Image 1 (cartoon, rainbow, N blue to C red):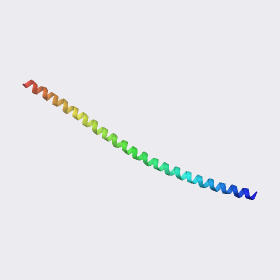
Image 2: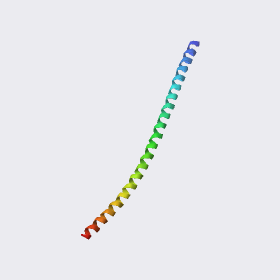
Image 3: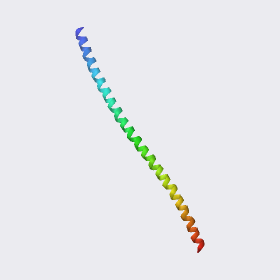
Image 4: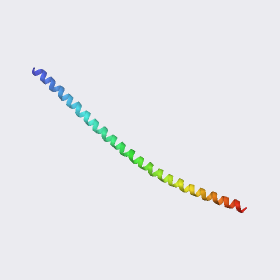
Length: 79
């Protein structure tokens, strides 16, 4: 009986060690994924800012293009 108890205690120690390792690995993976998520969120924010800038420039270029087309029509009318 004493031998079985010692054997079970050894198995418990091994299981506790495995569980500790598993928990530590999960914590490390969680931290790594949190860092990835934070970096991706920053990248998304930068892309959104770039998109806003491009949309503004596109709108401004459309206005410039329209003005140039009107000027071209005026010049054609003066010929």
